[in-house]
Length: 199
Image (cartoon, rainbow, N blue to C red; front, side, top):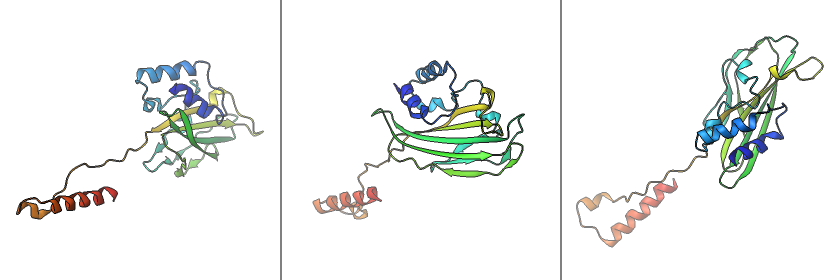
């Protein structure tokens, strides 16, 4: 079920043909991980090529949902005049079984050049797990994509939803150490505790 959600979430936005065994590979990965989507980090939709073929220094997802692509030298490939880099960020609510938001960003990079680091904010509304896929296509000068050896799409990051933490600890005023507790001091302590939680 989770594998089907992930496939349907990205199929419309992927511009490459997945290999014939990707469904079984996706399912096996989730089963081995007990259904934990985080285990899909590094999963290849095209097992013949990975994004590290093009980015020797891997991109990373920062805590504030910003994708950081480090500075590095982009290799030169025969017959390729440009690299189309597409970031697909999708938020999936696995409990409700639905996609709650998607964001896409496309970059064009010249091969054989020095790439300067860049930060890409991913604005994906809704609740759920954020799954980020990086797609890279080698392009000919006529705008056509290359063969599968130069087409990659990997899940590069999976970020679980953040659950707020609350402290259910009764806070007593300092004077309770010097005098017996009364009804008024208990009410005061409870109000003080609620103020801290809201902040």
